[in-house]
Image (cartoon, rainbow, N blue to C red; front, top):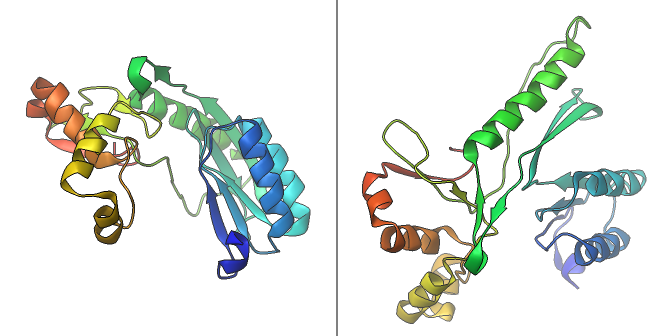
Length: 219
């Protein structure tokens, strides 16, 4: 019913835990989608699983995009979008009690640079040149930085659930039905605002030193 109601060409973002539930959902959507549609895996799937899925969907003209959480993927394409080469570098995540999920923003930057260097070396001497660069990254993260742009804490991942009590507190002032009307969604612990409230109330010494609150791409 979801696929039928979407305007063509469709773009469907799948935000599920990695593993069987994502695999089954992608397979089912792949059967229902049509040429020109795009499936986007926003979970934390193993990158080789996403490569396999992309190859299975390609003959049907269905585009497949992996939005990574535990590693960076860099690719080179020609002007038509045909994949020429790719590189992957992991950066991982750290988990803790109460649903904590942190990531090291410096490790993410270092992994990104390493993957880019691999591809730059691959085309060196071929006569090819890079005519454009596009960057995307995960969303709903929080990076508190000082006035010089230095991270004061590890990046709080979109997977993190420590701010769930703050989301419930917000709901006591703005009920979920009102949130949906005013914000277009019902806020949960993964969202930015509850994370900011957690930082303010749980780490006031860090919040006081914070000059900017950034997401992954901006940090």
